[in-house]
Length: 317
Image (cartoon, rainbow, N blue to C red; front, top):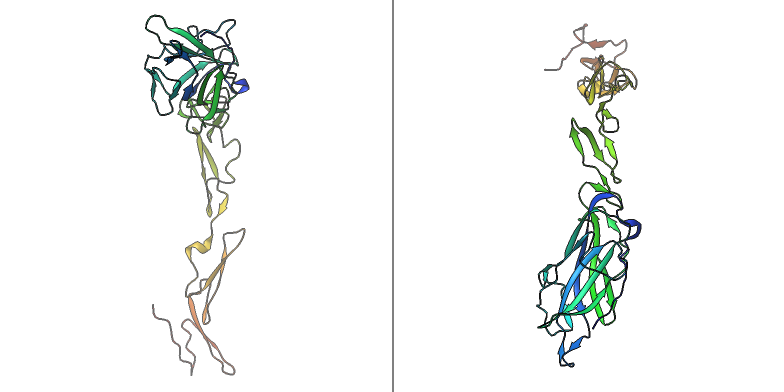
């Protein structure tokens, strides 16, 4: 049985068209036909050859493939019209899934050619050459890629399979044609965004992120003295100020200056504070004990004052 059918596997705009690196994975699930031979007494013995190529003109071939091709599978599927290949890691010696690394897409279209041959004792017979048109998403990496189920048929021959396409590590865009690998060395100081563009690390600039940024000239230090260093800077802060850029006023209440249960309140813009003292305590830091007597013509006892008829008691430390 001889027949030809040409269908292109077109990956459209999602495929790389310039130099890059990515993968096309094809996992064959099952094959079926209605082929009989020997006066319809036996089913055929299919053998397969797979090819990925740019679109071919004229008769399809499997021996002139731009991207990759397989050898012909061995004669291991005898007298059958159905082969379940989903769990087979080898189809007559051909790897399943079939993974093809693409270094450069010559054209935006790809042709997948499948040739089926009937194994005979003397001369093998050509059974069918057919293909399938596909438009697939190119995923950013293998880990996040998704298999898509597909069916290809011609005359009585049918192949069920699934396919996925993805970029290799450090390659970006739907064409897998932009290379970006994060670096932090004399060659550059950058990370990569989702599009593969270089993002300079803080303190670096330029197309390759190799030029030091002068943060002092840009006024990074709000106050104090600025010192520029390769890829960084430092600020020598004046008294009572802190932070990378000397932009924060220290909170004097953090040192807990208010004693004897007093409450500290810091000024919003100056390094000063006031203490709200507990009863019978006073002073800047509530450090002095004061006994206020409810007598007429009373006097206050503060510190070491000891008037007549007044008994003074001091806290024990």
